[in-house]
Length: 259
Ligand code: IPE
Ligand code: IPE
Ligand code: MG
Image (cartoon, rainbow, N blue to C red; front, side):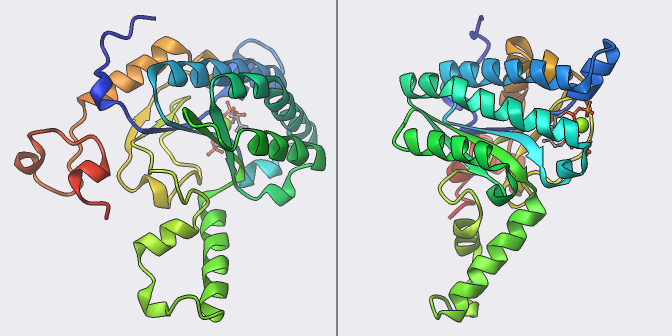
């Protein structure tokens, strides 16, 4: 893969992906939706590997939403099986390349064997430093907010915080991603122009990139195209073009907006 079109000094620190279109990919080929998910798993592997090679420190993958629990049981069952298989198959590679796994979402709803495997891999990879992969499983942005408010409210009740001192920093620290920088780039495959309850708080200033390519077809060249497009964007964070012109800041930190 020729990466010469990429400016290594302006890479996104965090890429988040809404991996959509597995069902349509399968339907177009007269295959079952589950075949689409199976092929989508290969895209996951390819995109994690490419992120690692390029040197993107954080990659979030929206794999299963809170609302996806409403799908037919056999599809849910197959997705959970694929997930467990993916985790078990990738753990050696995660250790070899120093990849840390995190999961966000309501883990209590996952089948016990998936949860055990997930927790084992999270635990095994906890000290890995090169890259962090964040799997959003049984996740929705609103559900995250609900859980955040519950945690924070009980800490206020315990006297840990005064309601008046609650600020953006304290809220961010109580979300599912306390030590993760906000996504710089949010990619959605399959052409849908919506967020579908993925990160809500965290994407306040993310650059959005939607491609008609279906997730099972999303591979290196598509990812490279998204990254190149990201590097063409001018992120203003509310300021004027002139203020951000030189040097073009590529992160909230650089703009001084995020305290
Ligand atoms: C994304 O593909 C995978 C999950 C949501 C689990 P879909 O299964 O949503 O595929 P489409 O949108 O029906 O094509
Ligand atoms: C979003 O895709 C969720 C994931 C990719 C895990 P959906 O297919 O569930 O979203 P909608 O229903 O088209 O909004
Ligand atoms: Mg979909």
